[in-house]
Length: 328
Image (cartoon, rainbow, N blue to C red; front, side):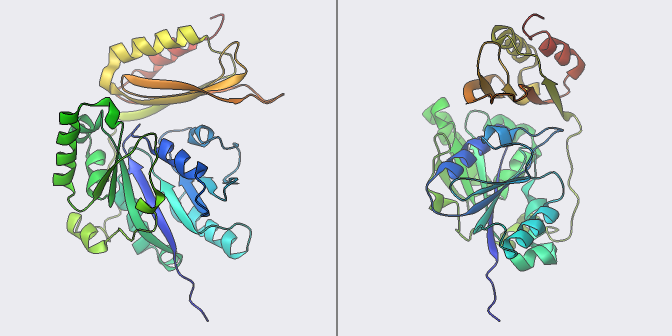
């Protein structure tokens, strides 16, 4: 019997707000002719990246027009990888490779470990590379304060530096030097709006087990990993339309009061007077908003906001956000 080659897997990681979803959008929109299964994982009680990727909600596996699949991890990685393989073997879905987007607070080591210690996964999948997106504007602070950011750089086979246009040349050069000292093996690439030649990140045979064991001698045996208990997420949902000017004032106040404590925030909003949903994303003091697809006739116009922060007074934040609705 002819042996079936394992399915190559790319793990896409990077700290909160680095630009992973932007890169994913580039992959999903590209006319690459490849069938890619994308697995998403988010930190917090509600995931909205599926919406930011313009995916219909309510489906665990969604096929894209260009042949890609989008999956949202609501359980165990082993389970969903196994289910993907089963459906592929039955001919229900077709894909040539898998791309896993981790949460911005993930240590990539336990994800990579899955492909070596789980026999069922090792039989059908091959870890091709770990690709880390680095936010040029905030990376130095993140590397100073968060062990997860350091692990993401250390385990990378490719380092994609985003938002380089937001820093000056000396700052960028210093960052690139720091990244090279932390991980001299990983090649670095500057990316704008997630655009990169897919040959630089897919099927590159970049992950080396001996290098992983050098970084972490207990890589194959240690299943534990730590999380910062001071970091938590908060989700706000409402079917009442927002007054955009009130919400902008609220965000400005939150940024002014909490600065770096407000690590990441994003949302899909129903704004009064607008027939399209509004997408917004932010990292610390920087945020951006853009119009999304129109609300469908009869569709519930519900807003969802997700905040991630350190030692944040979420009860007070809720009161502030709730006061931003039209008529409030």
